[in-house]
Length: 214
Image (cartoon, rainbow, N blue to C red; front, side, top):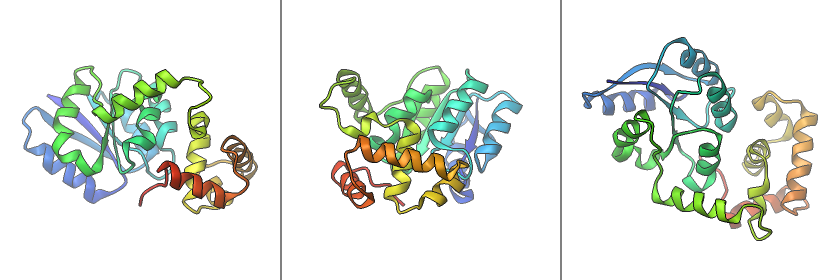
C-alpha cells in the first residue's frame, strides 16, 4: 500500500485528488497539509511513501521547501504537482531533490502512474522534462545558455514575483526576507539578465515564455 501525504493550499483540489486516488486500491491518502509549515511538520511526524507537493503555497514553498524537506526527511520521495509549466520549474525542482514533476493540467491522466513510479524509488519525468534536463547538462556553463538559467533558485523566485507585478516589500513579506535582501536580489537579477528596469524584465519573461500563470 502506498501511503501519500498531499500538500496543497486549495481544499477543493485536495478533495479532487483524494477522489481520484480513492479508486486505486494500492494507494491511500493518509494526510493533508495546506501550507509549508504543516508540510514540514507532517512529513516528519510519521512515515510516508510519497509526498505530493504543490509548488506554490503560503509560507515556505517551492524550491526552498523541497530542499528543506530533503534535509529533514531525505528518504521521502517528492512528486511535484504544479500549475507552472514544466519549462518553468521542473528542472530546478528535480535538481533540488524532487523525484517527479506533473502539471495540474494533465495530472488526472498521469497521477497514479507517477505516484507508483516515485514510491518504488524511480523518477517520473515527461519527455519534455527529460529533453530539458539533457539540454541543461549539455549547456552547463556555456555562454550561449539563456541568461535566466544562471539565476540562483532564490533569484529566480524573486524574478518570477517581480514580473508578476509584486513590489519589493510584498516579496519580502511573502518570502519572509528583509527588503534589503530582496532589493539586492533584484539588482543581481537585472545585472544577470542585462535589463535596465522591471519593464525590460517583463519583456524578457515574455520572450522566454517565463511569465507566471494564474
